[in-house]
Image 1 (cartoon, one colour):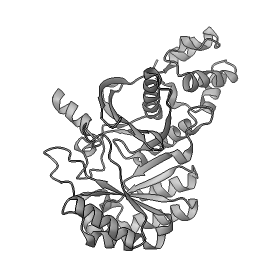
Image 2 (cartoon, helix red, strand yellow; image 1 turned 90 degrees about the vertical axis):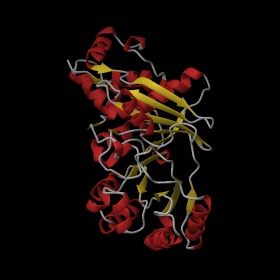
Image 3 (cartoon, one colour; image 1 turned 180 degrees about the vertical axis):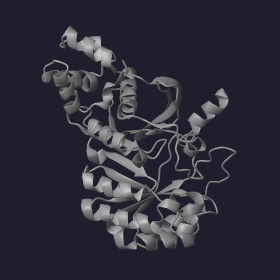
Image 4 (spheres, one colour; image 1 turned 135 degrees about the horizontal axis):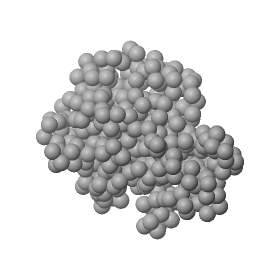
Length: 353
């Protein structure tokens, strides 16, 4: 029998499964309580669930499928985990300490096909999508780590910005969001969850129509098609003429602010000229726009981009501000470990080969 992760089921799906297998519907609530509130690691720990039900659960589901391979801890409190999945593939998950709480960055795919030229995730092509349970389990593993170290802390925020393109794994992404947002489970508020996309315009429309109240971030990184296509090949399929109308639809439909992520690459996209172009691009939506300027983390010898000079970063920031664009230079995390997304995974695979 092929088992699956129990974290991949919503509470309604688990209730339906219980009924289908001759169990009472209320068992689903009991099991969820044990999984998400008491965070057990084995079914037999669920002391108020009958043995027949426990046996059925054990026959059909796993509670944990991730195996920790590497854990890197930064001086700033950031922890990067490298996990091995059941099929041997490797993924990364990151815990970041922010002034507003503890945030977990999750991975949605094994590898990535988007192929952004500056990104370590794209060094290794997509092997497969993660199922929703594998995404949920990343958050659960980090929460259990916090439980074990005894600091009485809880994961309060989630960013879907790890390896892969979340909107290229849309169905599993949406189920993941529903599970972690459920008030009967982890109860992480929708407004404490951010999903980042490289700009799959057709999925932005679909995401807007779901009305999930989850935050959306767009990996923009360039203010014109020529430059964006040069550094992000996804722009060939979804140029700004397709992407910006999708963003306008999202803003009109949800009235929620969008974050635009912009990695600053030395002598590539960090000039005042690009800052002015970006301000012009966002001018008519600036009341619902927020630009996150990201100092680049050099990845390895195969990616030749360099970090922008501090003076260039501040000039870019000042230019946006003077043109009425809300922006911030992102606080960096884990700079003394493998900070760039996908960096630890690619190093480990290279070492193994």
